[in-house]
View 1 (cartoon, rainbow, N blue to C red):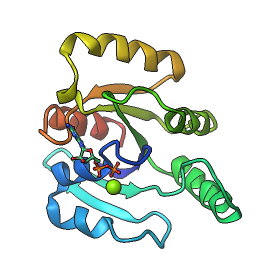
View 2: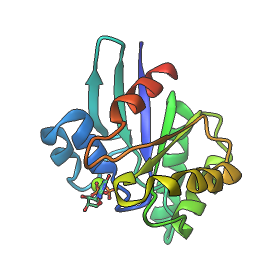
View 3: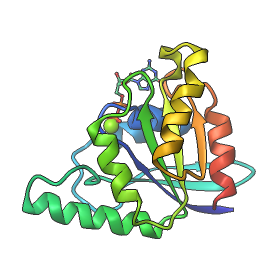
Length: 166
Ligand code: GDP
Ligand code: MG
């Protein structure tokens, strides 16, 4: 199995850290260069079960200019074309306006959206259920996977779940 996955989420939720964890330092550092092209490849993950091409999706934030507006449309096109969307959020930070804006954008997309609850190392395990319930009320996510991109917790499970959608 192989396919394309777009990674979205507001700044600082841990998108680059997750890519570091999955793919390794080298490619993630490359992806931190200024984004100039559409559908920039973050990296390619290959295992015995499948191959996942991770795409960076700049421009899924609230547009503040004509260019931003254009970027938004491009981002939206990408989300419709990939096999799955990974939507990263920061569980320690709560649901912010940036997250809500992205969720609004997702409502016009048919692609399955996997919600990645990142930074679980920063909360108490008992808090997780409440957080999951809050997100379930906002959108019909295909999967909800708690991880720590930094520590690597549950990242293997995330990869196995992604491969199911390719
Ligand atoms: P991006 O803007 O979405 O690419 O976010 P980054 O990957 O640059 O991460 C932003 C900050 O969050 C950095 O200081 C990371 O070390 C930190 N971070 C990312 N993932 C985790 C995590 O799972 N746990 C903790 N504690 N910090 C994290
Ligand atoms: Mg980044």
